[in-house]
Length: 276
Image (cartoon, rainbow, N blue to C red; front, side, top):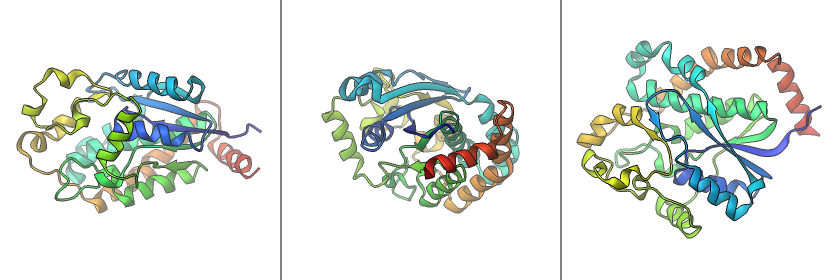
């Protein structure tokens, strides 16, 4: 039996939340796998986070981190592309595109965790970015019910889904802690205006995380006009649950079948290994 390793896969953009999550996860895991995703559309600078990865290895030891760019183009097409017109009509652009993208990354991290026999997976979700009337730049993956849905789905595969910074103070506190550690905080992560006017500056391109142009386009009303994005928690949960049950379960089974692995056997093996 291949034993499960005391290691964790972290969805790592290099922004404030995933960067601090990387530091915090070292308290409980021997190694943190920093995984950045190649989704295949309108995203640039996948290696922008390399400077902070080097800093993490320098401070805490190169053996404490692994880093990989993971190709999830096929997974993203499966989750968001095949029914995109129907999803836009039924759920709206924010859910159909941005939530679907985030869901694809979550499942990409789950598959990576299973393939590499890791104990857990994690992301930088945080309570401060739960959408609300006063929180115009918040995102739907931080809704409590969404986090629970992701956690429960991972648990089916005996994978712990962790959110290390979910309850960690304010954005200012997270940012200060990282700057005290000597990490690179990019222009937009310093909470400068995310409007078009606020983005016309050379500093914009000094990024420590990838640039998602498609997300900026989807949010053009918010970015240009300050109009909040309609983010409904119940509808987001409905969308994710549908995709999990009707699309993702089948995708994961087929993914491992193509690699001569029976997913049921893998799940059973993980459960036995974790018990021992």
